[in-house]
Length: 254
Image 1 (spheres, one colour):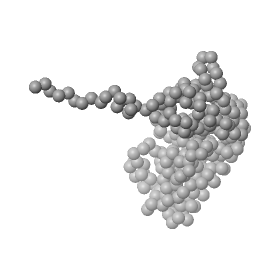
Image 2: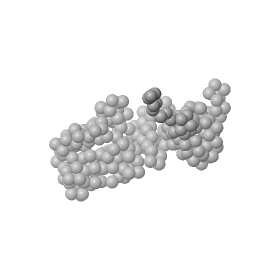
Image 3: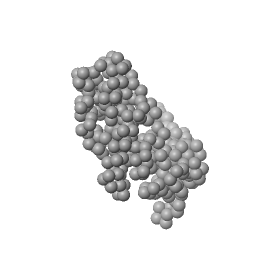
Image 4: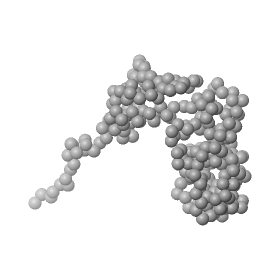
């Protein structure tokens, strides 16, 4: 008697399980629909022809210029599992525009100081200026036009603005957790004014002696006494940095 072979999925079933690809024409159609509403203020957005790359999305805002191949965007959206529908591709394209580089002017007007990783190994954190776009925050890198005076002023204003970035305080036993539900990266902004945050923690009923913070960018900030902070840092399953309260001001700018 011949042994039975395991049942194999039909080619039709496999085709149904694979995500449908996003085509260049899908991206072009979405661009025509969503770009007029996104090109506000100083942002100009258009799809242009490039002899070498085919159609490209061009984003121009003050000193920043970004050119993105529609073919590359379609492939990235396909890999990300974006539905090849007007709504799906339109939402994905909106996120692409939101990730565009931050201009020097936007950083000066609305930048906020936060803590971010200094290296790919996630071994240390430093201060960085970011600009909020909805729930997303985009880091500012000074352009070639930004001189030292502009950089210093932008960082100083971002530090002052950070204290009012908002957030939610929750006290759980010996630990105070500060989070930002609207934009997770902004949780660490409160550490730009550490004494103000420490006062809020005390008002909530937790008085910390020689407090330390456990920082993981994009996650709530944990504040606790040294021994508790040490245990927290050891128990977390993510990369984190434990810092004494006095060490926050000494962190370098990125």
